[in-house]
Amino acid sequence: FAAFYREAADPAVILRAMPAVYASDATEYLARVQCPTLVMHRRALPAVSTDVATQIASGIPGARLLLFDGTSPLPFMGELVPVVAAIREFLGDEAAAPARSASASEASVTILFTDMEGSTALTQRLGDASAQEVLRTHNRIVRAALSAHGGSEVKHTGDGLMVSFPSATRALECAVAIQQRVAAHVEAHPNTDLRVRIGLNAGEPVAEAGDYFGTAVQLAARICEMAEAGQILVAGVVRDLSAGKGFLFADHGETVARGFEDAVHVYEVRW
Image 1 (tube, rainbow, N blue to C red):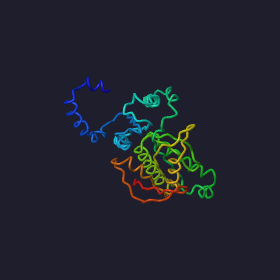
Image 2: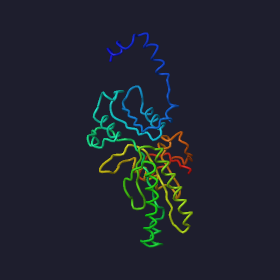
Image 3: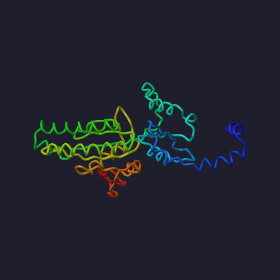
Image 4: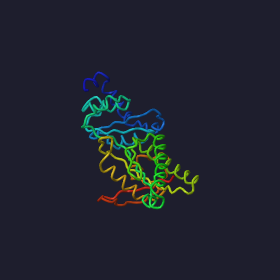
């Protein structure tokens, strides 16, 4: 690199160029990016923190963020295998996905849980067949919304669905769409006992056998438990990732989720 710099410019040019480089700011242009975007960053990069990568990813509509271990600012130096595998996977080269290094950090994803409130009481009141029909209605609404917003169904939880998104913004848009569609369905069918609560959290869960595990998932489930019918509750990290995207949040303060020692800041999304 020293040889590269010496061949590219003399010291006087470098001294004039570097202040201009560090003073430049493209933040205002991020929202204009319309193509699918993959933002990659190495956690231990000395000069630039992961906060910058998060800010860039949250500023580009639908962007996906991947964090890797290492210190190199250049994608073609350091641990190369997971970087190349991630790029090939992003570009649609499915055959390359299994080659992704196990040492690579998991992608940051947003986890969304839905839950039909009072499902047990509903079954007792309506009977198995009628209660199952309400559940099927819930599933149709949720799956239609996640399909429209780029979500991936992870699993059925009995009374709801667990869904993952590469983007916090898409996850929130999907959550809002679900509640709006549920409200519209209930308005059109007043006798339908369909009430849904939604909880979201973002993090880097462990991906295994088509499922996600770990603290990020557990906290998303606990936040869903905190919600009431018709509510969308999110962890503070989801609010931060979706800053500037036009969502309205109501601060519910800090609370300790069941099974957790540390408090989490919870917000309600107004839909």
